[in-house]
Length: 358
Image (cartoon, rainbow, N blue to C red; front, side, top):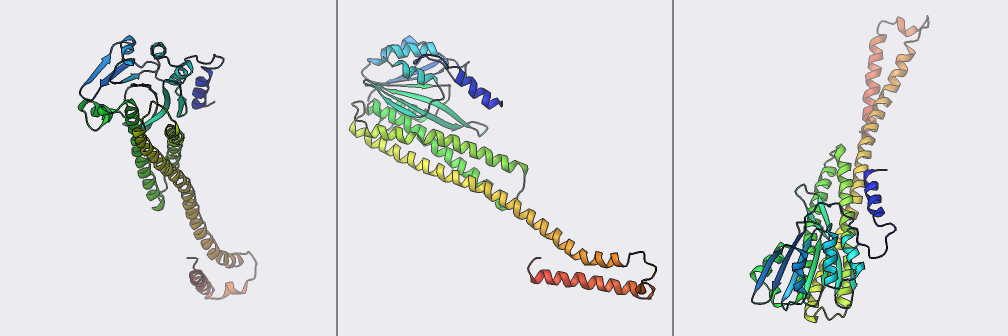
């Protein structure tokens, strides 16, 4: 069993036999420190805090301004359970929050909406990092849960801090839109980088570059595209359900912004499907290029063999050990044979050129 299969089996075994609603962290970052930040704002003021413990987050549920609580560290199951109990979050939702293998989805409850997304970005080594982000939208608050530090929400934080745009004049549903929009905007960065990688590989294949690493690069790109597609494709249904859902938590004037997200998701999804077809075609193209080069080599070898076959025939005849071969006694036989050889070679080369085999 490979290492990847062992990891998958280990993750699946963590939840085998447990009752529904059992909170089991299935991620890899088990030593992540707990970090909780809060933004409590309205049109005129903004309070940003780093909360030392979970209990400090309990007062934001009933605060009149809009509140955003962001928790990093899904391995801290007890802390998440305390927040869930205070905000009356269903046990199945808490189970999904700490299960990092969740598919993007939306669940509708009486007092809140639960949304799961995949946040994608490139690390310093140009490897795609996929992190699960869970959102809970309440009447005047948004809870977000991340596996580790580092996210794509810095622009949202800046807009809240400095009152840029309309975010401080809107309600919690617009804050949720801004967070989802930040995630989707980084999808464009991902597909742009993937497109550049595919173009570079296409140039190498068209230039006839034959390196052992090309096939590995193509396979790595294929895995990246499939990984991105699994994160983006279900998001269309999530945004579509938000549009169709008549929830008092989302104002009608905010729905226009969610439609804009839906358009962006469709655009990203279509680009991913195009890149998926391109990478499959690129593999076929590379294999065809290798096959064509091999055919060229075989053609040259076949032509050389065809030229030497009649020469070998004559050499074989006059190399036989018979006692009497009349031509061997003739004074100019050797030179005449060379003339014949040259005539055969020149004649066959001219013939091959006329047939466009050379």
